[in-house]
Each structure stands twice: as structure tokens, then as C-alpha cells.
Length: 107
Length: 115
Image (cartoon, rainbow over all chains, first blue to last red; front, side, top):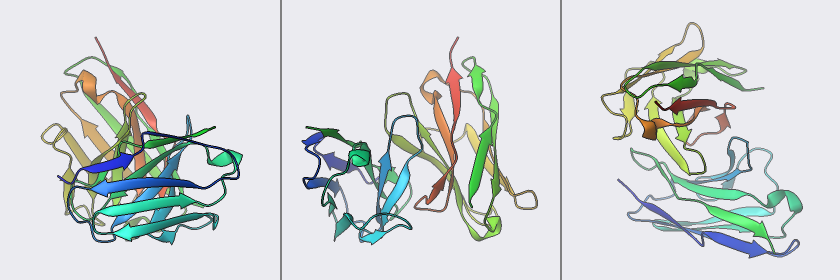
């Protein structure tokens, strides 16, 4: 099983600033990496797939990068609605595995 | 638009069974793999199972293998999860999910396993 490790567990950032979230895979997943945003009481929402492709309707301030074992989600200028929990997911091979999540909170 | 509506959750005793259903609409059901993903209260996400277009290939997480069975009825645009021998650690919100990586989610249905 590929283990996905996200860092940091909690990130405190002020609105308008940039946030950088990291995800590391225990084995290469090529570019089979997705990012999700989840708000309390809601289902997750797909932000990024293929490591760097934005899903439909996702604002340009969200960007993904990386390949192999190291990945980054960057939110260029945080809006109030961006404060949530973010998960990475590898879908390179079964079982598909999520990271443990990064909570992005308001500083 | 895509709609995934789960049903069948509830409270069950350890060792009991439940069957979850998911009604899909707004897309061509037979064109997509479908999945069940769960989230224990206050915890992260766990992919439970993944079924191919026709149901000929199904994958399960080790944590549920041998106890859970996923199936689909393409004529009725429906996905199912039969859960047997339930354990307290199976307590979670269960999401019906489209594609892999998931690009659409249901609202989730809560399964509580407790004596």
C-alpha cells in the first residue's frame, strides 16, 4: 500500500496570503495525484487531478505541481471560503489512498 | 447535473448487516467506475471499494475484504454496498462516488455500529 503523508497537519495563514500544502508518497505515483477540499458537514470537492490539472469550476488561484513522490498544492491568495481541510489522493494503484489531511485555518 | 443519492444507513449492532444504495443521475452511469469512500467521525477519508463499468472488476480495501460486497445495476443506474459482520470501526459516513479520482460525491449516509 502506498502511504501518503501530508504536511503540515495545520497551517495558519492570513487572508490574501499564499498557502503551500505538501503531500509525499511512499512510492512513486507518477502524476496520479488529486487534491480535495472538504468543509465541515460537506462532501469533499475535487480541486486538482493529474497532479496539476484544475477540475471544472475551480478558481485559478488553486494550482498543483509535482510528480513521482513529491507534490504541492498552492493557493495564491487566500479567500475566506478557502479555509477548510485539504486531502491528497493517489490513484496510481489499488488501494487508492488519501493523505491524513491538512487543516488550513485563519491566522 | 450529476446527482448521487445514498440511502440505507442507520444504527446496527456489531455483527449485523446493512445494505447501502446509491441512485445516480445526470450522467451516463455505464461510462464510469463507481466507488464507496468512507469517513469515520472526525477522521480522514478511506477508499472502501471500486467497481468497473460492468461490475466485472471490483477492488476492496483490506479493512473490509470478505465482509463487504459492492455491486451495481446499470439498468437502474444504481450502486450498492452490502455490509456484513459489521464492526464498531466501520462507523462512518459512507459516500457514493463517481470515477477515480472521484469527481462527484453524494451527500453521504451515516452508518453507526454500536451495541
